[in-house]
Amino acid sequence: MLESYPMVNRSCTLVMATAAFAVLCAACGPAAPRLHGNPYLPPAIAPSLALTDTAGQPFQLAALGDSAVLIYFGYTQCPDECPLTLANARWVIEELAESGSRLAMVLVTVDPANDSPQALRAYLDRFNPRFIGLSGSEDQLTQARLAYGVLTATPDSSHEHSDVIHGTRLYLIDPQGRLATSYDMSVPKEDILDDVRALLEAGS
Image (cartoon, rainbow, N blue to C red):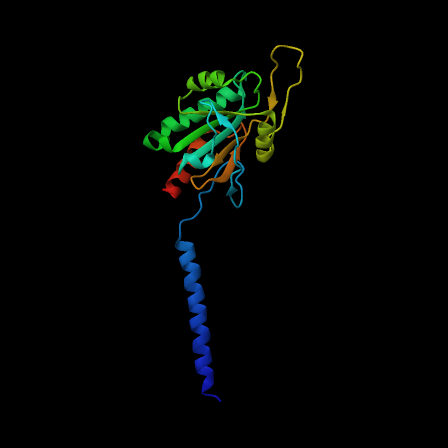
């Protein structure tokens, strides 16, 4: 009976050593990038956007392949937040140099009555011809906004055009198609650049 105890002890030691080795191996694996803004923990598959691009073609996030994606809900006659956000996205792409081809910028209109495909295309071309503009029916756009938690309002419809009140959050999707983090207007463009670069390196 006494001779069986060393064998039990050796077995326990082996199990403990195996468990410790597994923990160490997990720790040695690639760590998820620490992102700025408001990260989604854990990241979840980004909501689809069943909308139409400025060429009249149905849009699919999956068609962007292994790119990271920035999504913003805005409109062409926006006086301040929209042009600043698009200018920051252009800057990020330029700073990424060759890797900039793996970052897509998508603008979903919140003013479909005035943002025709031609108007969207002309507006985005002022920033970067690769930027993607999306529109759709009122129902489709409502579903897209709900999926991303974006609120909008037009306070005065008596004029030919009124400013649209809209959420100004910028959403970042990683190369695996997961919603990684989002930014309010206070987040510096340098932090967005760091996050995009980290996601592209982790996904390459």
